[in-house]
Image (cartoon, rainbow over all chains, first blue to last red; front, side, top):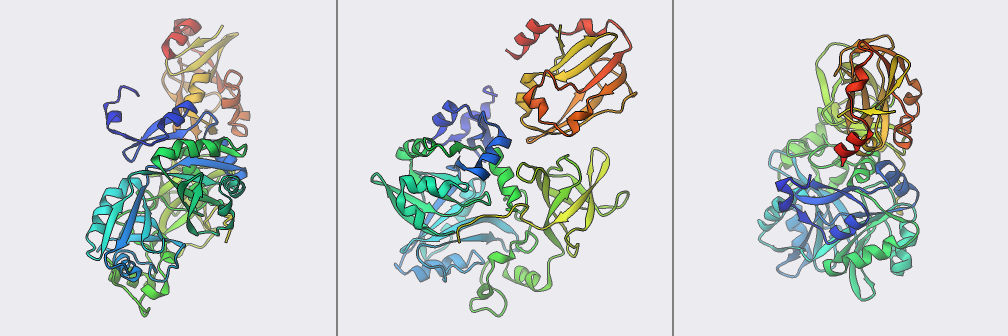
Length: 379
Length: 119
C-alpha cells in the first residue's frame, strides 16, 4: 500500500499523526488519507458510538463562509436560496439546516449543512464536492465566498457526547439539536453545532488547525470517548437512514427520488411565498406534486448476508427485470442484521417483499421504513 | 502440525482428511465477519474451487478448496456465530475435505514459510 504513488498526492488532516499513533488503518477517501478503522474494529467502534461517545475526524469536509457584500443577511439568504431549495431566509441566527444544491435537470449536486452565524452563513459540504460547490457559490454576485482552510472538523457523537463536551466546554450543554454557536475552549474559538451523521445526539466542532490535535486529545482523554473511523461512520449513517452523496444520490437523482423532499419547505414549493427560483425548480416542484417514479427505500434482507452497493433488486423470486439496485448496504451492528437502501418503483408498501440477487441466488428482502434505528436527537 | 496456503488458509491433517480454516492474519485483514456461507457436505471439488463465502463488515471474500477432494463436513455453528472467525481463527474451522491425493497436504507451507510470507 505504501508503494501506491497516488498516496503522495493525498491530503492529510492535522490529526494524521494522531491517527497513526492510535493504530488506525488509513485509506484514500475523496482525495484525503483518512482512518477507516482503529484496532477496536468497525463493529466495536459502531457499538461504542451508540453506547458512549465516538470521536470522528471529518476534517476532509469543506467548510465555507458566505458573507453578504452589502452587510444584509437577507441578501446572502436570498442568494443561497437561488442555489438551494430550502428556507434560508427564515433561518434564525444560531441555527442550522440541511439542504441540497440542485442542477438545472433537477438532480442533486451535493447535500450540505448551512448555519446562520449572525452576519454570515457557515456551510459544511462533502469533501468530494467541495471544489465544485465553491465554484458554484462564487457564481453568486451578492456574496463573498471564503473557503475555511485553517480549521479542521471533528464530530463527537453518541449518548454521552453532551456530558463529555460539557466537561470541556460547559456552554455546549445548553445547545439544542441544530443549534450552531461559537464557544470558547481555553481561549480557542470552537464553532460548534449540535448535529451529526450517526442518528445519535452529538456535535460537530470546527477547530483551528493549530489546536486540533490538542483538542482532539482532550476529548480522547475522557473515559467515554473512543476514536472512530470512516467504516463505522458509514454503518452508523446507514442505520440512521441518512443518504450518502455519490451513492444514494447524485447529479441524476432528484430530491423526491432521494426521499429528501422534507428539506424543501412549503415556502419554496408551488404556491409558496418564494416558490421556485432554484436550479431545476420546474422539474423538482412538478415531481413533488405528482410523486416520483422511483424513491429511496430501506431494505432488510432475510438472513445475515449483507447486500451491498450495486446488488440488483427484483420484484419476484425468479425471472423478470431488475427494479433497482442497492445504493448503500452492509451489516448494521446495532440492528444485528444486514441493512440497505435502494431507489425502487414508487408505491411498494412498507413490509412488501422484493428480492436481491446475491451470488446467483434470490434472497427475500423486506421494504422497511427508514431509519432502521430510533434517533436520539436533543430537540 | 499446521500447513498454510498462499490464500491464508490453515490446513490440519486429521486421519485421511484435512481441516481448513483461515489464519489470524486473514481474519484481521477481513475485519469483523458477519456471515459465512458453507459448501454442501458430499460436494466433490477441484483445487481452487470457491467453496466458502465470508462477508465481513467491509467486503465479501471467498475461500478456495486447497486441494481436490470431497467435502466431508462443515462447521455449521459458524452460521450463528460468524464472529468466532475473528475471536479464535485457529478454532473456527470451515470444512473438512478428503483429498483425492492422500499426500496433497505435503506441498503446502510450514509455519516458518508462512510467517515469512506475511512478514
